[in-house]
Image (cartoon, rainbow, N blue to C red; front, side, top):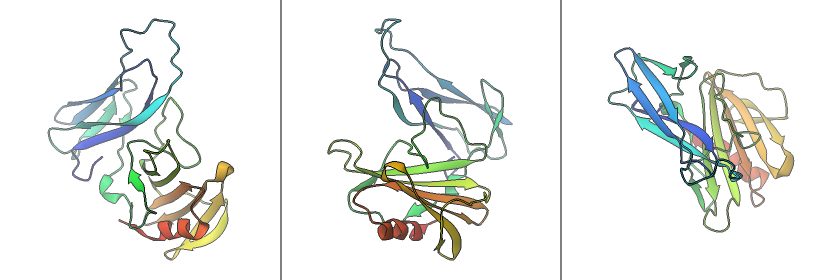
Length: 208
């Protein structure tokens, strides 16, 4: 949920045989019902190979802020508690060439279809480098989850006075996680040109 409470966004995955999914909000006095519509290309045959997965963010704008209205899933009828975008952390420092992108590279690995919402309100913001020079040459993702989750794996480090855990992952990515004012924050990066010191500097330069 955007900081003004009027835009709702979600990551989605779709195939090369589909249009980009469309997110709609049906508003009432006390509820907002979200509908995600998927549409297969009319020119694709029923047995066409759909082996080129896509992913990105889709959004819908409300007529007025969410306020105290309940948000529900049109299929499961379950209640959705959005992450309040006004609580997102933003980087004050990123290496040259990084830019905000309309995709999600979540901590640990890229989300795989079907996208599954976290059990608690959470959001991941992703930045990538050299998008116009042959794909993903590096990424930095910043994730924030409501609630201070237990953190036991990794090497102890300190991030702005908070006890944190640093981890090296397969394929060269690294992450650091720490609790902060009722949230759990994770910064992850996969960039062969980035040193550990520069990575930790990014984490220590976050700004709410």
